[in-house]
Length: 284
Ligand code: MG
Image (tube, rainbow, N blue to C red; front, side, top):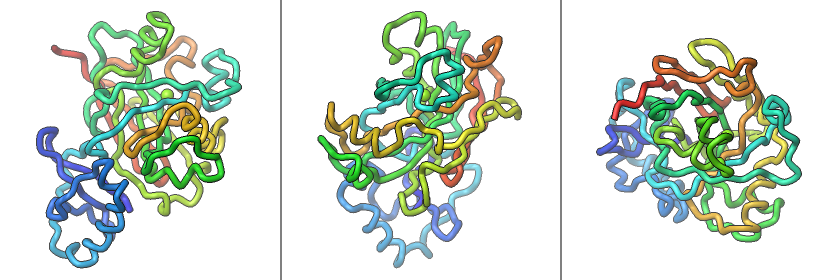
């Protein structure tokens, strides 16, 4: 299944892609909270659709798509998880995953505007595969790790390179600016994707290809990341793990390329959807 949410930021509603139609399912009475999918909500929704899909209105194409999770837990990001990206960043390949957090206040809908932070000159792009945790995971093995993953999504992991690399020893302030975490358009259930480690992911700026990679090149793959993280912290329903980005970020160009107001970023991952953001200047 592909689940999405739609509406204005103050009145977002759940929807589902059903027989290629985008249906408004607010009559189902539940939103896509961590409690929904931790308590078998997907099965309940599937049964409900069998009886009620014909009565659900289709949403118009003009409708804003919202973040597909009604509430997320922590966002855990992985740095330098593709060999080609580590090379363009002039950094050694990590021996263990490089982990950092990102503020959940950065989350916006998949096509919402990217706001360039006040005074920023080094706002950069990163397309990433991410996964959503569906049940509490603590000290889980790599072999059982995927049981704890409920959805695949993609995350546009924007950053500010000056804040990240020159202002702080930690990366968190460089990745946490408002609007730096568009997610969606869909929560995609695992059965929709045959091999999560064989998906193309791409990103264009103003129509020009910048990133064109494959998740086959992940250094630390999803089961390893879930298992690894669970050795240090419990993972809870609604937590997001973003797995890193392939080569082609703005920092990797010579000279580096960064986003400015008016730029249009389009990106997608095979099977998970695509989206588009327009960069706007911060305006108070
Ligand atoms: Mg990243």
